[in-house]
Length: 294
Length: 307
Image (cartoon, rainbow over all chains, first blue to last red; front, side, top):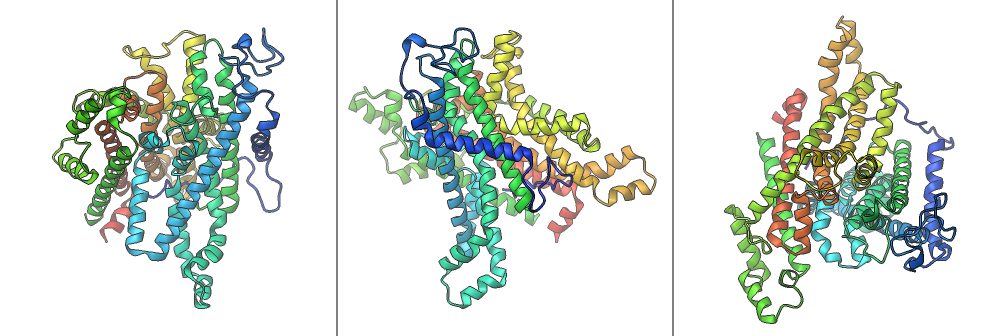
């Protein structure tokens, strides 16, 4: 309905505003290191995990994490109610949560850029239809929309990722449309058009590279929201289904043992918070650095 | 006036898109006869159920019937509970509002003053707290916030009940969970809006003509900072609605959010559609209100629209 929330400019420097050619501030470097570690874990989870994430150790149920009384050194982060190794499950959960969020971010960007370009190119009724869809998407909170249509996903992680790909496309579509319209006013788009380039070539080879940095910043800001949406839905039991693990469903499953085994929710919760925090810090930093119009 | 009519038309189209989308997606995603009667039910019973609810008719006929009824104010019947969908939703929405209204009130009553104070005392302890709280508020999702609050106040300190409803104590943790994230967001937003306004040339100008600082803040800074803040409040209605779904589920609060989850699981079409329609309506109205407030807060927007 309304334009995206205007972000008032921050005239005072937040934690070390970057100036050209300088190294990123310490917080950003820590955040980047954390994101790097998470991506690494996601890649090597299959090899690194000490046990298969579904392996049961019924003799070691609800074993606490290491420094605590009664911990079993074989399970440094503890075990759950079925004696499954929390460390192994966390690694697999990081992999599926990151993979789903990454896929969904790409899908949402692809939808947004495509619709933004289409409406900028055709104007008229195409633009009107896209704008109506943008309005409708913005008028229903994503989580509520997702819950209403999640029945479609069944137990399919692919469909679930596609559904999450509907998160935030409307913002990217708006941005892309606006920037494509202003690109058309500039000489270069008209010049390649006069040289005989087809519209698809103009948009993909000439306009897209010019707006890519803004789109990437928008994606970085969308990514943590998608992680939160994924974990929220999985927490409610509507997303990734057991025995598969995602950070959200680990918290959801651990909730019944909050009194007896709080570590079951604290580990995945800490990872969700640290990861979204890191990505948002990096996103804000990128925005300040490359594009303060977002 | 013309501006307002265009907005109204757009709002109506938006709602029509939501209704249509919900209608078709729900019908394409599963058979309520099987989810409600169970997979064991015999073919005749399933057939009778489908005939009774008109599910055997072509989709577009069902859609036309639904829209026609909707325009006459008939939101349909719940298949599961044999009650009017609107009646059912309205009853549960009341329980939801007992959480969201206090949460929004706390958000505004704490967030706005905290943001203003932080902006007026930049670099102070309050300012730093607001900034840190804002980051935490954004990155800690409500389900984690809720579980941490339960762990601290219900499990460890045993001060408050962890789940359920009935007494006012039951409402405390859910309301606090809902309010925390919003308060942080509003505080941070108010702060940056205020900081920006305080940097404008008319602020020293107002001081220079001899006004005392509290008047400058109240008459010159606050009204100008209010415009972006009002926009965010409009958006927060949406995140509050989404937040209640999770919070009601964690605290076993019998509100519309839990009704939504249950109804989706049972493919209770009329109820899901009614909830989506009402949420959409609420958001659309919130945005319209925001637009009207703009005109009231900022005479420039008013004259721009008139021309």
